[in-house]
Image (tube, rainbow, N blue to C red; front, side, top):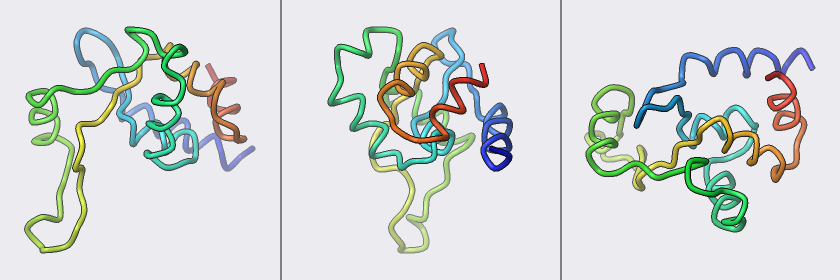
Length: 115
């Protein structure tokens, strides 16, 4: 359990305010729950009834551009593949709890129980 707690406490500096709500980017949620971003987004896609409006949403191009200038980096200038190729999803607190009910794993359970 001691290995899980640092990951949870480090996530607090990744919370952003967007559209008047506190949210986490899908990549940060993946880190929090100990999985890959593609599995986070796949869980949302495969369970649309569990994520009503206000639980998770995709960034629009302008929001992504604003965030990219602040927090994203890309390897495009080095010729290597990397960076974000799709508009990320963001999760509200309700979305995080719902996601934890879908995901299997000790980190997802521990993250939910921390709050």
